[in-house]
Amino acid sequence: MKKVLISIDNNNLKLSYKNHRKMREDLINTNIISDNELIFGIDYLQNNQKIVSLFLKELCEMKHLTNVIFDNNELTSFLLPFFKTISVITSLEIKNDETITYAICEQIIDSKYINKINCYNIPSFMLEMLDQEYIEVETRSEFFYISNFMQENNLVQYSKIYYKTNVRISLPMNEEDRTDFTTFSKINRYLKNIRVNAFHSEDISFLLKSLKENHLKNVIIQIPGHTIELEEVEYLKELNKTWKKAHLKCSLSYSDDYIKDNIFKQLIINTIKICGIITFIIIGSIMAFVGTRNYFAERKIDSIQENVDKIINDNKNNPIQSGSTNITTDKYEIKNHYIASLLTLNPDTVGWLKVNDTKIDYPVVQATDNDYYLKNNLYKQSDINGWIYMDYRNDDQELKKNTIIYGHNMYYSGIMFGTLHKTANKSWYSKEENLIISFNTLYETMNWRIFSIYKVNKTSDYIKTEFATDEDFLEYIKLIKDRSITDFQTEITKDDKVLTLSTCTGDNQRFVVHAKLIK
Image 1 (tube, one colour):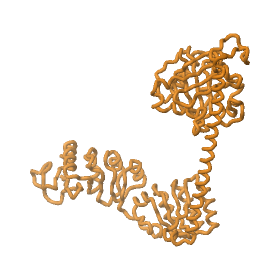
Image 2 (image 1 turned 90 degrees about the vertical axis):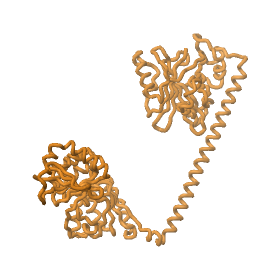
Image 3 (image 1 turned 120 degrees about the horizontal axis):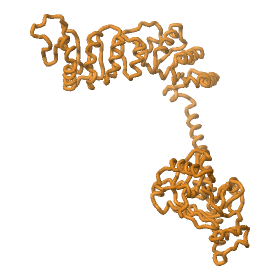
Image 4 (image 1 turned 45 degrees about the horizontal axis):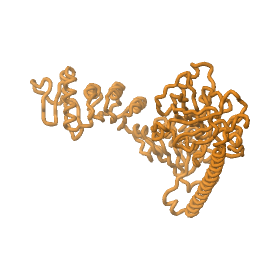
């Protein structure tokens, strides 16, 4: 009856058959031969796999063993399941010169901890199976090639061909080189760089074609820059355009010695310096222009605001009556005379908006469209800053379900809605007083409590002013509340009214704040 010998060599656990000498009759199952050798009977192993597995686990952990060596395929297939749960064993070796079997391949994949194997030979499809499970394979069988390409890169084993990431190729290539490179491309899965010794258009085209046909991507062919002429550089540019979709590329490389000795080195450095200075001047000029523009924009808005304050103060003791302005309603009583006093400055004035702890404290205007006050200020003068304005569909006398107010995001100067983004800071919205927005019309003084703040890609789904049914309105509320950066714990009913503040943040995004009217 066959016996299995288990021995220890450094950090290796070796398993082989022990049948070359006569065994004692009383050695039926197992016996300790020495500190580093044990013998198990085949029958005992078959009937006591769980016990032996636990024993091997303790042995491997105690002796710090990380590699198991099987004598042949038969032993591997029989004993590999014993190591399935032994976490310290991460690699295995099969010593005999046999091609690994599919059954062993499956057992290795089924093992939880083995990530590297060494065997004589393995079929390509099995190597790919193991590679997909991140198990590295090293083979010992050698290929005998006569091509310069295979010899130069020491591609004598199948596993080396499969895992090779960098190769060197001497151009021009002969037929043997081309044949072997094609074989290499079919097997390899990790190639990233090909270094050639010179530029040869026919061979470069062959390499690119072979790489594409065998589905190798993200490979760079590096060509020594000093071996190429100016017109060949243009050829490479066109070549790269052709092969871009295949994720293949040619690039020029220069040795350190070449760069050091190159007569154009200083010219390149000087060019870089000049480009840097020019870039610095351009950036500085842009910053100066933006800074100057922002300064004058702020001064201009300050001037308008000072004039607004003066008009309000001058009319504080002389309330404006509806008959003395362009107000044409008899239905509503003017309550906010400070707003009405601005009708002499701009008859489009409909209200006043203030957001705590921001620079937003402006009169609100309304035109017959949503474009006019994007480009004109309170004086109706052309101004890139525009003004704060209400959606033309809204009504300042009878507020609709959603009143929308727009303004430019003048981020650097902070004017108009340039500080609205502060509301997204936790330090801002954590203060209860900041959540109350003041938006007053000629006819009503109103406070609004914020319930949603968010940034969204450019869309029109939040700028509705009317809703067909209560259900439509509540669906709209759910939409905008779900987008919020935080839950403000504010209940919105079908009877509530909403105030929406909207500004740009980039060409394709909007920053939005929603608040509900507080009774």
